[in-house]
Image (cartoon, rainbow, N blue to C red):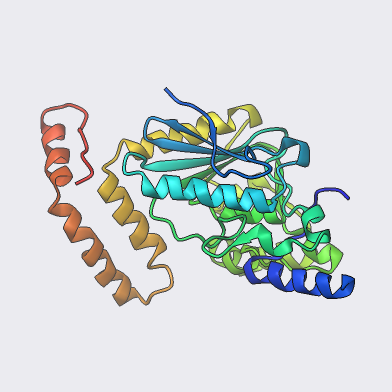
Length: 292
C-alpha cells in the first residue's frame, strides 16, 4: 500500500484505530528516538538553531509512529536547551511529507501516529515557546500541509501546491487544517480548500499571508536558516515574550491581550538583556545576549 495522505488528527487516529481493530477483530547529526527506525527524525545544532529533519525519503517522509516519537523528542530538545533559540523543520528526499503512513493505519497502529503532548506527528498540537520555521521544498498535502501550518513561519518552494484532499476520499482533515486555516487565511479560502479538496498554488497562499517566503526549491532550506538566524540575533527573552503575546493571546478578548502583553513584556524590560540591547546600540556593536 502506498504511503498516503489520509489525515485523522489527535483523537481521530485513536478512533480510526479502534474501528479498524474491530473490523479485523561543529555539528553532528544524530537520531532523536531509539527504535526500529531510529533515524527517521534527525537533529543538527547550527549555532543557536536546531535543525529538525524528517528522514524517511523512501516513504516520502510519511508519518509513522517512529516519526511522531522522533518529532516529540526533537521538540523536547529544542525547548529544553537554553542555548537553542529557534528551530527549522526540513525534510530529506524529494518530498517534504506525504501525510500519514497508511501502512501503519492498515496494520491497526493509527493511534501511534499521534503523541499525547503533540497530537499528529508529535507536532500539530504541541505547546512551544520557541519559534519553529518550516522549510517546505515540495508540495504539502493533507497531513504534510497540516504539519507545515503548525510551524510559526513558512518558507516554501516556487511552484509547489498545498491542500487538503481528504474529502475526495470521504475523509476529514483532523490534524489542524480545518481548525487553523480559517484564522490563518480567512474562512472563504479555507472552505474552498476543505470542500473541494483541490490544492492551491503556493503563490496564492503567499498572497493570503500563510507563507512568509517563496523561493526556488533548492534554496528553501537556506532561506529558512537565514530567517532563523535573523531571529537568533534578536534578544531571546524578547523573542519568546513577543511570540507568546501573539500566539498565546490569539483567542483572548482585546483587553485581555493588552493585559497579557504587559504581564509578559515588563519582566523583559527588567532583564540584563534589556540593558545590553540599548548599550550595544550606543556603542555600535553587536549585542551579547545572556538570556537573562
